Length: 277
View 1 (tube, rainbow, N blue to C red):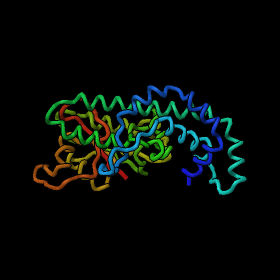
View 2: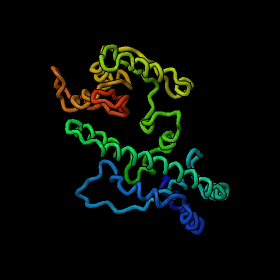
View 3: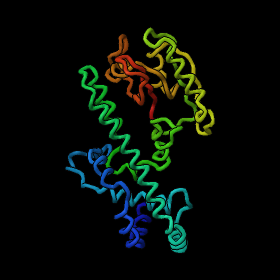
């Protein structure tokens, strides 16, 4: 229904949108950043190459959605449609500026992560890098501006939110910190407690964080995979082995765990992992 309403808005705002499209800020730069974005997840490659979609078209659709539909009562008749059109038409330029700024920040972060992953050439990390690239491609892809709910797009621009806020928010995050490690003695507890005490996290009404100790990386891994905790600190090597069923004395595959951030530049650095919705 929203797609149909956007199409009607495009027809009614023809000249306004043509002028708006010509003035979209930083469009050329964003097009270059968007050029490497993959096709949507789950698309059948046997269908042939996807039809190219101009980023400007996606931005215009997003702008219309934000200016006339997002967070507002549904439009179910002509009278409501015309009233909404006249009421919010003057806001188009301001909404366009905000939408382009948000999209630019997301694409800049996307390219920075792509470059960082491309710089990792160690042979024993290749499988993990490929896995992380797959997660990244599931977040930013052709058409993500329309397919990812705006609330999650907006959270990626909030400095008080985690980098992974495009994932659904759980009502409770238990941040498990391993109680035994020679390499990061005390560091895991320090980070977990800092997350718990971080003021924006404490003030959030959407979720709460509770730091707690555990027996170590493997326990965190198993609890995250089972959904008993939503966020845990795990050795990157364990994340790599668990997805292939190669943990010592444990051939199960823990495929409900995602690597979403790291704690330090070290072959055995901790990875934050959680179960996606």
